Length: 126
Image (cartoon, rainbow, N blue to C red):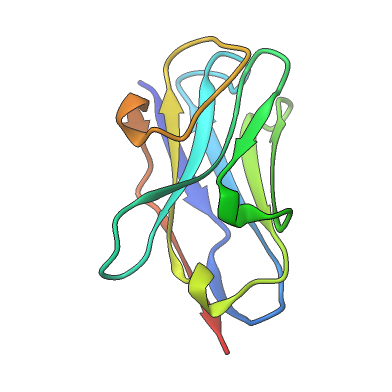
């Protein structure tokens, strides 16, 4: 069974950093496209970053602006999202999702993703 479990969220002061983890089971991160999404209170879910399984190409939302880095560790079967210079507007539940295709590219259309984790809360205080 394909599953992903997020961890690494927490309460952080503005300007700080976090590394979110997406641990995969039932598949390897070398098999499928992985994406990170977030949903803030009262707002729609939005795509953050994704990584393809072929070639490891990435795609980021415009608001990322170099503060977020997505990367994959095959040995740990985990995809990470590093967030630097956190802002209060980054406060959200962050979700990891799996698009069950093998591809050399990815996009942030959540409707194309097949499996979702339960999310991890990130709260940034000002």
